[in-house]
Each structure stands twice: as C-alpha cells, then as structure tokens.
Amino acid sequence: MFVVNDRVDLALTLDADAVHLGDEDLPVPEARRIVGDRMVIGYSPATLVDAIQGERLGADYLGVGPVYGTSTKSDAGEAVGTRRIAIVCRSVSIPVVGIGGINAANAGPVIDAGAAGVAVISSVVAADDIREATLALTRAVQSATSAE
Amino acid sequence: MITIPRLHLISDSRLCPLDQFAVVAMRAVDGGVDAVHVRERTVSSGQLLDVALDLRDRLQGRAKLFINDRVDVALLSGANGVELGEDSLPVSGVRTLIHARLLVGRSVHSIDGATRAEADGADFVIAGHVYETASKQRQPGRGLAFVEAIAGAVSIPVIAIGGITPSRAREVVNAGAYGVAVLSGILAADDARSAARNYAEAMGIGR
Image (cartoon, rainbow over the protein chains, first blue to last red):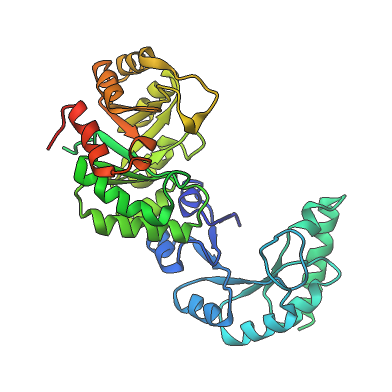
C-alpha cells in the first residue's frame, strides 16, 4: 500500500492507495470530497475526541502516538504510551496504527493494546540492515497478533 | 470563453502578514487587480484552506482567486485556478486531475520552460523575473528582451513578474506581455487601492 502524507493532490496524481492527514492538514471530509471511495484516508487525531470525530467523519484508520519517546518528530509531543492505544481502540471501530519510537523489541505491547499495526521511521530507516530490521518488526507484530 | 486576468496580486507574508492579506487584497481589487494569488509555502494545509475560503467569500467573483502549488486546496476552496512553480506538480498531471475546471498558470524562467508549459496545457505563464527585485536578491533581472522572447515563443498569455512598477508595467506590456504580477508594488504601498489603480491605468485597463 502506497500512502502519501498531507498532499491529496499529489496522492491523486500518483494514484496512491491512501492519503494520511495530520491534525493541521485538510479536514477528513474535505479530502473525501476529492478522493471519493477510491482512496483510503488515514488520520492522526490530537485527542481522543478528535479520534472519535475522525471515525465519524469518514477516516478509514487512525494513526495514534507517539506511543514511546521519539527523536524523529520534534513536534510530536509527549509519549502517550500503550494505554492511549487501548483507550482509542475501545472508543472506535476502525483500525488503529501505533506510531512513535516503535521497534521490534517494543512493538508487541502496542499490538497487545489493540493496535492493528505499527508505523515506524527510524527503527527501519536508520537501521544498518533495513531488510533485517523490517523482518524483525514484522515477526514481532505477527507473533503479538497471533497470540491474541 | 474565460478571460485570463491581467493584473495579478501575489501574497508574500514577508511583506504583508497572512492574516492581513485579505483586507489588502480587497483594496487592491477596488483599484483594479483582477487576480489574487495565495502563495504561502510554510503554512499548514488546513490554514491554507481557511485563508482561501475566506478570500473566495470576500472576492465574490470580483477577481479570480489562484492558489499556488496546492491543487487540492484550489479545488476545495472553489478557487478559479492554480499557479504552479517549477517544483510543483507537472502541468500535464494537474490538467488530468482537474480537466477544465480550473485555470492553470505556470511560473517559467526560460523560453524552453514557457514552450513546455504551453505544450503541457497551461492557460498562461508567469515569466520572470524581469527586473531586479528584493524578493530575488543578487540575481540580475532578465530584462525586456526576455519578455519579448517569451511572448514571441508562445501563444498563451504571458504575465510578467519581478520588480514591476507602474511605469515598467507599461513597458512590459509594450514588449508583448499580456499582464503583470505584483508583490511589493502593492503589498508594501501605503494605499493598496491607489497603488493598484496606478498599475491598471499604466496598462490601460482602468475600470
């Protein structure tokens, strides 16, 4: 799945599978007006109320974080922990993806808390062996998922 | 037949803070500006959409509204067109996306760029910079010959940009430009309306 951040026009031009919208990006219903049903829309809510609202406004999944401390994004705010994942997952019925400081060693608890998946930057991009790091993450997520 | 505007005002938050731009733009429209461009690359998409919606409501069709770079914001705000830079989405791709719903202007800096923009389906080009300008320091202007060359190379309207004063507006129109785009000449003026009127009169488009 190919996801473009923020730019709905770019996502359409590239025929992407999804567009991901942050809290200060175009509102979800506005983006939906342009992409219709042909594209998945992800949304990163700033609060629990935003998360519930995001689902009602038509987001297909939510990105929630930062789960753990992260150095990638200076404006990400304080770590919310897996507890926030659990709370959001109980409050919405669309899939939740955890993000922020996640690696193969700590991905399991994110899935255990109810997340459908994880999103990562540095634990893959900054790894010495990108393929190996990705495989380790995939194994961690899969084993946590099948343990449920 | 859609008329391409001739006197374009382009936003620049260094010269006029974004929260004051709409008021200044409306005064400029009173003076004869017939296109208002929102060119802000540093604000969030959500804020850009709010600014565009506010301008569209104020303009009420009295001048055409253009959004720089962001085709999605242009579509959602009901703007009349998009202005694409050299690092924006390609004109041909945008044309596929919007068909004929929006006007497409393309910034160009060479004859090659202008002929390519025309071939790709742009409705007009914004060519510059013609004169030395504070916004592009240390780069000499390309001069009137540049305007003549571009106007001779393409059949779509050429909007000249860069250091254009009212008297220079007359000059570039005589050199073949269809219109001009202005930033500081209006945004930094004490009175945006009379500044705009000076341009309109110099170009012979008084209302």
